[in-house]
Image 1 (cartoon, rainbow, N blue to C red):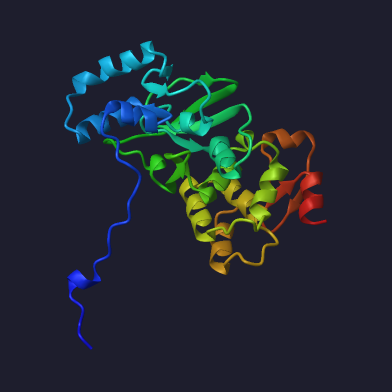
Image 2 (image 1 turned 120 degrees about the vertical axis):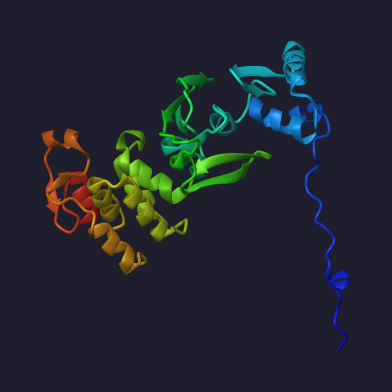
Length: 275
């Protein structure tokens, strides 16, 4: 049989979305954008950056753009809040309740958290409050903005968000951002979405918190698909003495000790886990 040459085996490139050619094209294709994205577009087209301010001013004056906050623009008044939250700063990453609501695909409530290594103040858009959590940065690198962070397509653009597994563990660390703790327990127990249990253990170890290890271990209790190696990793980091599952606020209502994870459960949790 005749061997095919590289020319014979080459496939035609798959056409992608049209590439913006002008600043107006860019604005038309980006319902929400940070000025750094427009700067990157200008550089890719070898346009002078000095033209950005006049262009933005023109479109704002014409009513085609609105200013959400310094450096953040939207094409219309009614825009997707996940696009807004992920562009609150140049390096913004949706996290905690913001990430959870993104993955849930439902309503976003009235609060959204994002991570950034830059100075940022709380702000709002419509009835949604955006709260930044500043993460440490050394020599221009911020691991919290990279580790288990994914970039996913959304509304024709992309959103940077903590992975689903990291989001669950982070909420186990910050129950104040998790809403109802029993609802978080249900998400750990749900099999609607396949979980990467090793990624969960990696995040627990990165946070280096015994109560988080105990909470995550308890939240996964009863699942038969958790690898033994993951269970061992979590057990190695569980609390050394009984700790309140819900934190200090639980002292007023007390609880029962779940020995395996060394956590004190409130009655509703005990009934849900133990029965």
